[in-house]
Image 1 (spheres, rainbow, N blue to C red):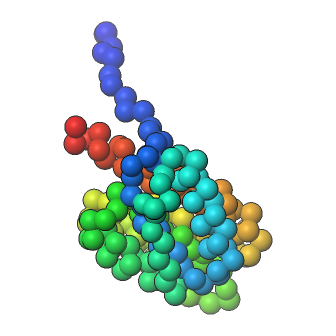
Image 2 (cartoon, helix red, strand yellow):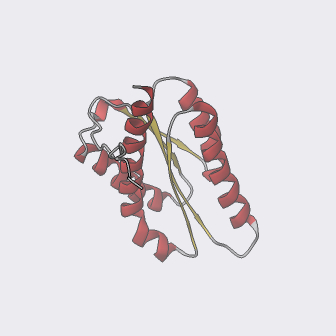
Amino acid sequence: MATKEFKELDPQYSAAGLRFGIAMSRFNEDIGAGLLSGATDELAKLGADPDQVVLVTVPGALELPLTLQAMAASGRFDALIALGCVIRGETYHFEIVSNESARGIIDVQLHTGVPVANAVLTTENDDQALVRMKQKGREAAQCAVEMVHLLRAFKS
């Protein structure tokens, strides 16, 4: 049986000309700042214009989905990035906040068609978050850029 060659869409990582919205939780603010640093450094490396990146902050992770939904509905952004950190405590609240913020973020992109890179860390402790924050921010920026190009490729 002969195999046919197929077309593969390669990831594209140029942020030039793209518009980004970043929604960041102020809860665990030091971790948020590290995530933001990683994301903005990577966006700059990929060619994003700083004037085309808008940052908004919200009280916590549960406020991210509504904010992202409003940002997506505005039509002002090609992609969005969610930043925050939920650290396990002694109560069940960790699971609620982690699960519901993640579900809400997924819902935003599925209902609006605007890609949302989820960089809301869910960790056992501060040390785990500190180790992961810069890299997770960078990965979120790469994800946002890649998803814009992928979705555009389907339209062409």
